[in-house]
Image 1 (cartoon, rainbow, N blue to C red):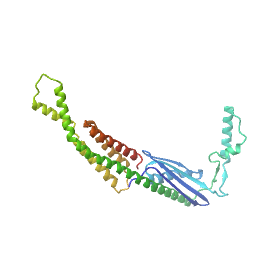
Image 2: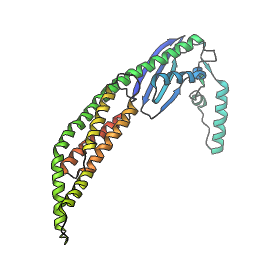
Image 3: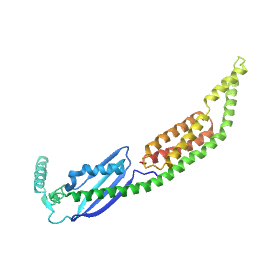
Image 4: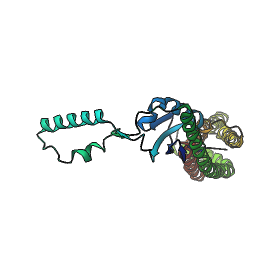
Length: 292
């Protein structure tokens, strides 16, 4: 089963005397990029939160927010030292810029980061364990969302790959006619050149054969079919390992064979099918950019 890198998870629970909410959003990214935003109370173990996320979500741009609500009265506090520092810094800045200092200092200061908090009481080990379990559950919710998105993407990938597969026999149908047309066109152009030298018929046939052989697309057709089968078998693999990058490499090979066929074809009907194939493989690549 494929997983999308786009996901969302939200878990809320009571820890101690407070309501804690963990919310995760993930988007596509080439690497794992984690951004953690927690209250001051939990900042000392942000690295452990990152470790949990990296084990569950593996890849993507991950934003996690941890919020505390309903803080008990005995834990609530105002960080007076920090408030004073904000006041002094802002006052100095206003003086340097020649700006009038505001009258609503209290309203401004209580909105500054970490002014109003949950006090300096130590977080117990039991509270840490409950918080980490909450983070794990949020990751599981995000993974469930990713699996649902991945299922939708997988269906679209199969549709596009099967479209390429259906076009391949149509190209094969026009290939013999293409070779005949190429031979007739080359002989016609040679006759129109009005050369004074009588050509050696055996040598002419040999050169025509070599020229047409260089534009032969049988190898490309065989390799394209092999790559399509490899892509489909990789999709069906049941292991939980991420498949996005591997499928991306196979899609590149599919695109390379399609391009080569288009360059060699010299046939309008084949090139029409090649254009349709290119459209499908580009859609595949766009979807794979969001696959884990």
